[in-house]
Image (tube, rainbow, N blue to C red; front, side, top):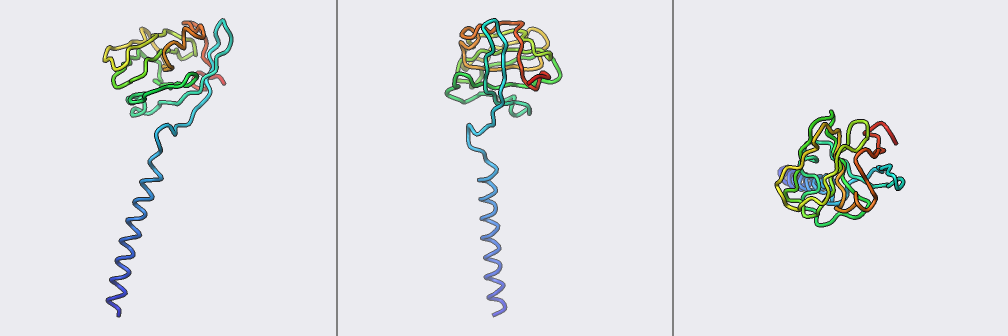
Length: 161
């Protein structure tokens, strides 16, 4: 009887361990699109434009960016933090959606805008000067809202909002 209890107890422990591993995998794997969004404002001559952005702060997040996504809604975007301010190079490898890339200085001023980037291209897109961050939004956004170099971006990354 004692050896039967040990066998049952061992089997129960094995099943419990397997269940915990499965639960751990389910809990730690966030579904695609489950990122949290933060508000970001751009002050233009036409007024204040508000966006909802995902943050890319880790090396993995910055390397992946918006790759493999088939769409990006108007008013949404991704903000890449390259602190400290530095020359930044981006590309569109494995990115299916044409983007406007807005390069932003540490003071929150827009340095440069690369509009209507070519999907899936490995061509390097440079900030052409020191940038703290890059905001990626759907192509045509800069034109639509009159966003220009020199406009101010409001977000905690730049000491505002």
